Length: 247
Image (cartoon, rainbow, N blue to C red; front, side):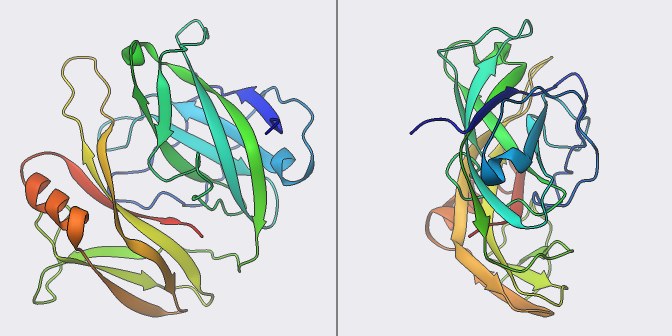
């Protein structure tokens, strides 16, 4: 499949990081300047990117900001090339994502959203930036929502817990007047030493696509591989439970 576009991000301008306890999918208003893009047809021309390898204490590292300059929800399928500090490609490094923008899973609202990148393979520690290629960019026929779903881990008795506890269900609340479709993932993070960056070590889906009715809550049980991951990581290593707009 031919590329619709390809561009290098501007990592030296730090993007806003999403806190570990905050949804990735939030609308961001920071403007990206100077990003050199080739001509792109259709919805792909509405997308711009910025990569921040580090974002500060309490925030997720390796954060990709995806700017959507349109007025509709977009679901891009992206491809990444890892770059070193001198912007040279690192061909042995594989780049994947936490929220699925490399698989067409992440839905980006007008304004923008974020994904989190994972670098693996020989030379992964040298990755300081990425070049982003847009394979496809599809318009999603769904209402635009202006809020994030409220994510609350729960125990069997319905008591609210924090993300580092052994929770058995997740409450998702939609405070918007329109329905929204989201997915949940449980993320186990690395524990870096020295100057190493923290990144996702394990990403486990919790349930399937969840359609949240307007102004209502839904309880999603944590079962199977997700429950095993929670029981193994909770209270022992850094972990997060995240929701993101999807389809």
